[in-house]
Length: 412
Image (cartoon, rainbow, N blue to C red):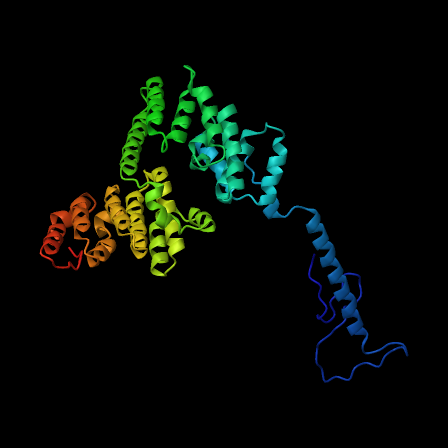
């Protein structure tokens, strides 16, 4: 709609008549009304008419906008993307992350009963993967992942992080069985074997390695198989190490009792690499339940992130946090167990440069528990090569054996 001009002298209003002048001050004597019914207030009445017209126009425009879908409600244009191409599947899943709940419902309705467009389902996988960690949302995600595993195991979305589940997810067993119907066949395709191996990788690495070796035999010239096998082998070693150093639920019960259900969901929303620092801050703020929830969630999810650069740092520091909580609850033996478990961490850039956490070691020394601290300092050398080679760890052990308390100064 064009602008409405009501102030310009002598300007036409578009109908051949001069538009009225308003708001202009002048010392000239106003013209005498030409009719006994005319009034100097007529221009103001004209303003009222124009204003009413504008209000009516805006109301009509608003009604029209309500009838047409807003731009934010339009579904993304992804018609040209191929759900079987890895790059396109990634874009489809990312488009799903941008969906509103109403748009996701529209996509669900368009799928029909048990069938539907693979591109739409790929978007829904992306949507539910980022929509929350509550059981209902994870169940919806699992239903779509299970559908792909059963009907389209070569679909590229199964190779993305969005389709990853854990044994705690409601659909885990269904997806596991669906993949087995394909991988048990001798003619399973390389893509199916790759996606099944990725699904099982962090939780059954030996099975994943066997699947990857079958894929490598089908495509001996493809170097990606060797890389995937190496990563699966690393996950297997890390899993064996963490389980060997694990604490039973009965042993950890005093600390786990601090965890509140609502904080479990909260912890699941924190990025993996931030969990250690978040748990440490919560403990410093006196929020024991939150610290326990964050640290315990980090350790439960650590084996899903073995390849993450922050894995060692998170695993190490979260064990330290749980040990400090145990010590505050006067469970000294449990605190020592967490201290020694922290030495099982994989090497990490942040640990290599900043060194291991010595807070719990200092607190245990204050309680006279020097044997556990000496063992800790003997075992953390692989995490901090500079401290081992620079003599820091040896000096601290010597000071403890001499009944002195180290300052744990990490300056190199």
